[in-house]
Length: 211
Image (cartoon, rainbow, N blue to C red):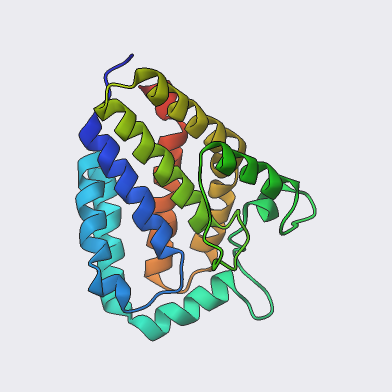
């Protein structure tokens, strides 16, 4: 197998999980749980460019305030009338801009293959951006675990599933989705979040070719 950088693998795992958290409704727990300190540490381990994005994201969260971010979150992802950047894969992958389309069913099959169980309390569609980032986190986490345990076949299997997921789902719609967020956001926070998300997913999508 090619050399595997476990420290960077752990940083990628953490960054994916923290990015997912940022696509839920913003609240005081972001500060209480030091989300952006953890994100900066992970991003710094991956690449200086990522660290710069993460630092600006944390600064924007501190500067803009919860009420302004909640308003922008609602405008971008919820409506109530026109939704600027619908956070569902099927909207971007299917011609009819459908929620819960065929691509949603397909990604659920990959979730089952990867042993990913969604909480019964979760009320969003299974291809919500936060869920797909959480699945990516799980795949990287399990890849890291297999590497630690010397389970090379399992590591290769998780890497192959990650590649399929990115090639067929998240890697295909993250670009237009994050572009819509950047174009429509009124807050620097969501523009920076979209920039970091898009850059991270682009890196992950090309990771197998680059390694």
